[in-house]
Amino acid sequence: MKLRDIKLGMMTLGIVALTCACDNKPQQRQPFAEAADFVCPDGARRVEIRETSYPEFYCVGEKGRTGTWLEFDVNGRLRKRGEYKDGKLNGPWIAYHADGSVETSGQMVNDERTGVWTQTYVNGVRRSEKSYKNNQLDGPIKLYYMTGELMAEGGHVAGIEEGPWKVYKPDGKLARECMLVHGEEKDCVVHDKDFQITTYQYESKERGPL
Image (cartoon, rainbow, N blue to C red; front, top):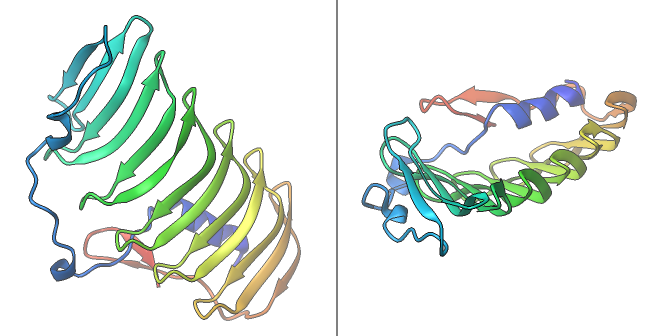
């Protein structure tokens, strides 16, 4: 299995962990509970957009959006939270699983992702660590199995795969390693030609690695 297929599969399939309903009991919360204590900065007005698939709450000041921004699903569960300054996202940005746990988190600077962003499976296990610069993948990246073991690691430069990439089996043994040059695989070494990362279609219609 090619390294590119593994990396792209992890980045695009929206993988989440398979969990038992009996172990994943969402807290009983009032719809839009986080918006109840929503306060705008001085001089800003509150805006509520409820008649949409993803209701929003935010504030508008003289220079555009300012302060906290909240996005909910149609049932009033918090999906995303961010911070605005002078009309642009600046500061922490968080996306949540349906049970309220953090799915994605990172920092925004003038509407652009920057620094290390993390993703977490719904069972609380780290899913990925990705480095951004100027809203592009830039720097080291690590992908993990839902059990916590490292799945793959490599790097990007200005959004393009660059440098050494390694893929690991669930038992931690190295399965494949390649040198990436401008996104193209070079000098690959396959340690286990029969190994491949598979996906399974869960009843929830979400996918996860096995």
